[in-house]
Length: 385
Image 1 (spheres, rainbow, N blue to C red):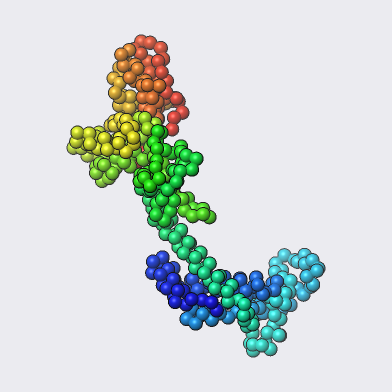
Image 2 (image 1 turned 120 degrees about the vertical axis):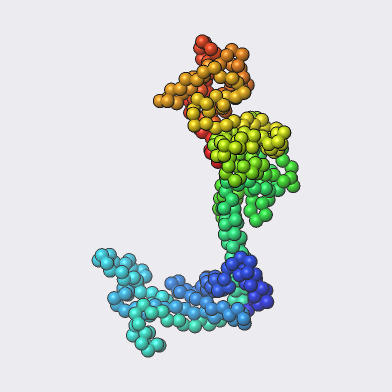
């Protein structure tokens, strides 16, 4: 046979040590593939062929397997005839001389042969099968390596869903960025990018890993830079208070590349949650803003009191009064005329983000006046950390 045994031994050892695939499993896969290849080239319909591969000598032997049966197991009718309809519980199958051997004949070959036992019959070696066998073994090993890599990648990145990962821009196709992540490809779709950002080949990019997908072409990591949790995770990197759970991110609302609001709460009365994210002289929030291409970030303190939370969410505007309709989950907010445009924000952005952050429909009214602005009623609440 045309096997390079030194190479096979080296590959088997490497797969066992580095990938955790036992040698026996790979040899079993090689034997199964060799048997399939032999049957395809030289076998007959209905044959069951098995192979044994000696990894030390490279010798391969092939056997035809036949199952021992009697009249209770099979129906002896020509293949040209249709199988009769059998009574319920009758499991007999059509007799196939390539697949079955009657028990009387089996006992002439092996004394004491039993029903359903399998007998092996050696098949003659084929001189021109060496090239096919070598190619088959090579393909099996390559397949096993790919399977091992897929399992490794799924194991590694499956645990990292919800984390920030780093990749290098490999190519851009129709607005989608493909990142080289080492043993996997990261996919950053156009809709998950921050607007006005441009990426160059070879550039290192940080993104939020929100899903790991397996496909016939490999493992793909679905990434986002516009996801609300990307903002939360960036602050977790910058603020140890979030990492150690002293400060918790309760909600995030983003219009990626433009403006975001993030609500935080402290579980330690001695720690200011807003100050934790701002950092000394604003260094922490400035680092996050820089990563997001200058996106403005409003950091507010979360509150169980809906009125207080809504008031904070509408900052920097000053609120005169808030009336809540619990049934419709609507908040009517009155502001001084001078604060009206600030509460609404440019293009309604401030009130819109406040509604996303709090989960309340918000109506902005000037003091004693009619409705000035209304945030959409059905706005999804941003994911909490």
